Length: 397
Image (cartoon, rainbow, N blue to C red; front, side, top):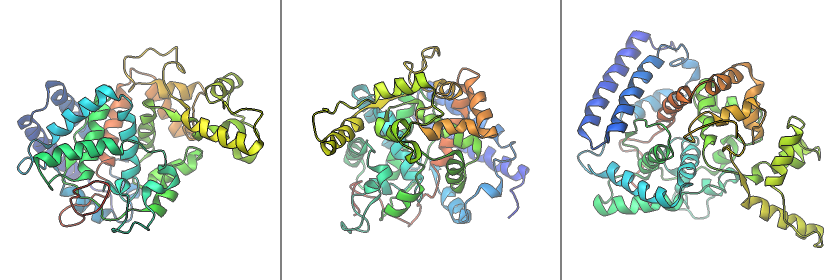
């Protein structure tokens, strides 16, 4: 298939952005959000001058069907049936965030794990699949066992159901809530197109196999993202989501003590940083217990411990927002917490991108991250008569 011609794609984007801006002007967005939307619209338009933006080689095999579904998404889809939907999401998220600052990172991870498997269809929220409680669900897959934020989505869904019963999908709520969480955490505003419907099944096997792993090498990471249609630039910017939140020590345990089954730590970790990581992720198990008991106690204590790409790990980096350059600066200094993160420095293109994102005040990263989030939010969506509008996000109707 030939790549779409630049004149056609630019005209299409101008039309979409013009319609979107007119709709935004009619909604109850604050001035800052509207300014951000205008700025993002401009940057999105300019981004299509890049050769890889619409290169057909980056599209998945069923991209024709996916593009058709994406075209049915609209900005402010619920303006007639539930005009207060986005306002309810925004206000509820604000209340939640005021008490639980970790919600932003939790929902961002939940959103990623949902969209990465069969698209943004809220399948990750299900506790059953096809109304079969004996069928394993995405929530039970190993990469998803530490996901959080399900209760926050339920809270928002409950408030929306009071206003507009059976109208707004859980898939749309998850995407909207994630965007609001990012903004509340100091991240960039980006437009969310709505009209998604919810999946009636969950995908345990796919979640087990296709979610990027913390110990993946650079080739594995890039391949998994490429299969979803993401370029290297988009992959590096999306991994910048690790700027916020905390990473459980269980994801670093093997790297610190048994890298690749060697019984030794990852040799690429500097000795001073290795000691720092081990101190933060140390086990408090009692040495008098049996070996089995110590191992169980160790595993239990490690799962409760966390580290982050925060200023205690990047003390020389000044910042007023979590959404800036400290993740990328950490990688440049060889202080990546996850093996997969530090592996970005082992590919010429991704290493150059890390350096570029680390070289300014964070504006380049924030711009590219916003673009990539818009793209991710439109992966594999269900629209029209496909799927359903769940009344309860954890179960099918």
